[in-house]
Amino acid sequence: MWDKETSCFHLLVGEVTIALNDVAFLLHLPITGVFHNFETLHVDEVVLLLIKLLEVSADEANAETVQFHGTYV
Image 1 (cartoon, helix red, strand yellow):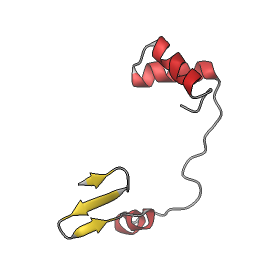
Image 2 (spheres, rainbow, N blue to C red):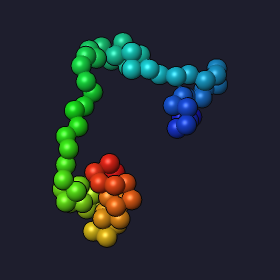
Image 3 (cartoon, helix red, strand yellow):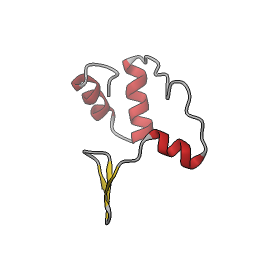
């Protein structure tokens, strides 16, 4: 069972945490550099993305951007 608060799996043998290094080792993936480079978006672009990707209404999208003071939704 996954615990969102601690980011751990609870198994019959106890609590287990999976780190990025574990994933890299198990899947043979090189982990280098920055995970993601975020670009600054204009509030209008954010509203359009919320409407398109999350399928929310324009009013809901505008309320979120107001509540979180811009593009930090």
